Image 1 (cartoon, rainbow, N blue to C red):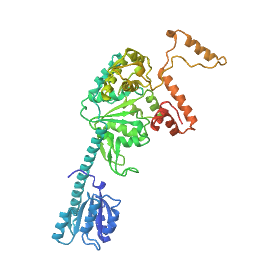
Image 2 (image 1 turned 30 degrees about the vertical axis):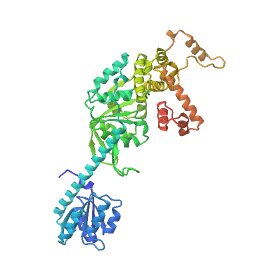
Image 3 (image 1 turned 60 degrees about the vertical axis):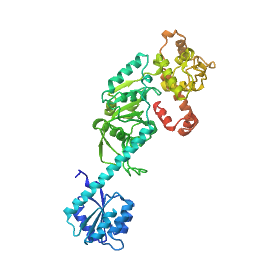
Image 4 (image 1 turned 180 degrees about the vertical axis):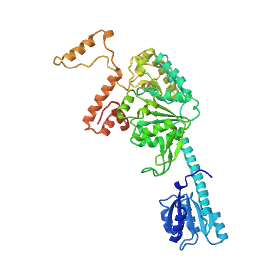
Length: 491
């Protein structure tokens, strides 16, 4: 018989005599999780909130016999095993009841406690098997639906490989880590090819035929991310009407990609650490441990690790997630890759949108190469897709290129004259100096400063109403929360 915790399964005992219920309590209170009802009517009322594995009923009860009660009980709780206690050898009635499915087992009275204990354990084991099979079917159906939603295109390594030395180094490191089981931390700016790299690691690994599960962590607030990753038992929280497997269970033997998991609650940190160290997960509201074999690939924007340290994220968790760091250089640092990437995206969207454009003019390439690309590869893809739609011939021209992000101005805007300022004069002299002697400017920091000022101004304008700020900028509130966190804006 399976090694089950018998006390984790509810057993409902129904009898119209309190003495009989007391005898049952005395015999089995230490062996099973018992509930009691005086008569069939009280028991049916109890079944509205109790889901027992086994229902034990006395046959002779006034108003409603044990068989009649078990027939109604089966309609409400079809999984429950019905055990009938009878002192009467009415085989015809018993056979009809067994054939109808209302009674799974019957025991003649007076019952022997050892024999009845065996009957109860056998009944519980049968119900446990039925429930486990249902759970596996539901998990398989959920996973099949998840795969249908997350159907991935074949990996095109043209999206991550390029002419630049930096991307050749990235491709080499992907090849090195893909064959191992090591967890990977991918660091790159927003819009970089972090998901593409994560999929490439999965496809190049022995786990290729197993699930690749993507989790966009910014879409979950508070405890929602913990629920999504670990799943839950029915009744674990308000609204948990059914049991559900978490994404970590769905990714068993495969790879889970966690996109920007910040912030992390203390509970989620502890649970993730247990997954990384022991390969064990527990659904919310459950004490049952499930073992998983899953590789974690994590993506972060620069500076998140420092934010984690300020937020008190467990050092051991950071250490385990940072075993193999992989930095993706922004597109502005590898402009020699822009032509190859743009041509790749053009082929992709020309086929998808049935457009005639098959090439980019030299002038268009020059315009793409001169742009700062604050949105990185994702922005380049959007620009090329739009150009493929706008073009009418077979060549994309500069006028077909429209940038959604703000390009860096070539000249500073005119400012009204103001009083002499020693610091401003020093800054002006620095800008007037030869280019070779000027200090190098961090474009990423400048963009962050611009975004920070605009968000602060909008928050002040809206009286701190984040929902209104998100509406004005045309973004989801979760995206706004993430940007405020990334920029260190505490509101």
